[in-house]
Image (cartoon, rainbow, N blue to C red):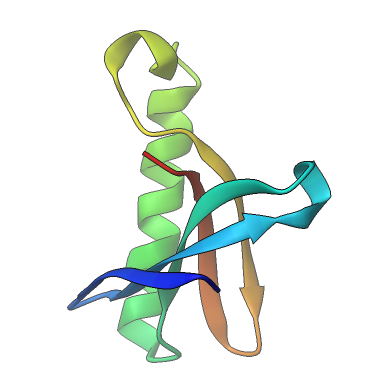
Length: 81
């Protein structure tokens, strides 16, 4: 983690380096291990997949790189804007 970018009701967004992809900077949204927050993050991923599946690049939508659970947290990795 390089720095905290934002913090809100549904978790934190931190700037990180994606070592799998050549050291590119990314924004990582971490939803706390509270059941409702994890469910909200999963809904967010579903909606983003639907939007991005229909040429999200053309509509100015942030690109989601990955999403996964880690130690009871839900993680969404975005391009860093």
